[in-house]
Length: 220
Image (cartoon, rainbow, N blue to C red; front, top):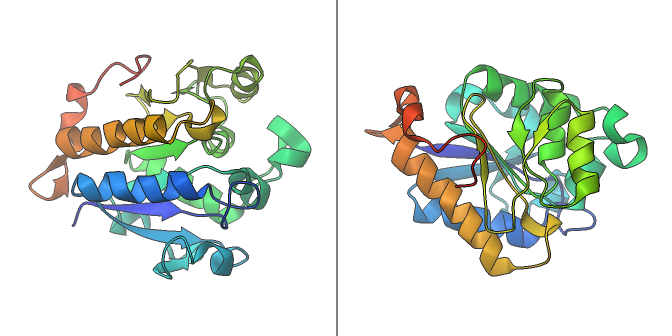
């Protein structure tokens, strides 16, 4: 199986969909580290998401976890707006059934999950109560949101990454922190390079390499 990520998009534009910088820089970071990717979105948001992926996009309902090595979710307000009821209901929100299925399948398989910006909220809701270490940046209110979902919040700056070794989940603040496109790219490169260097061997995912990762509580 090729080194390949399933990328989740939720529209186009940071207010109404996926954050364009975070999505494109994610593609660039993966490509530069030898990780292929294909994008997916819900039926409702497929057309709006297509421009970011240059029309190389499929319905989320068709995503089979067994065909991919990792799950990657850029941020943007549309991620929680279009894929959950978080903006209305906060921690008591519901999550799109296909997103829930995909997150659960990748997590159960022990495959890496990457969530940028506000996307960790969806991971936290689907895996609620598991005490996963993750970040939404440095804002105290955002940390309280993660606590309310049973997560263990870690304070990270824009160019830092939180990795929970036990659950194989990477999070980074993206534009949840003061805007820094360079800082965002640095963090995404750290994730992509760590995944390729530590998790992939001979063209296939190597679960035995987990001992090479940094401790969960420490930014990469």
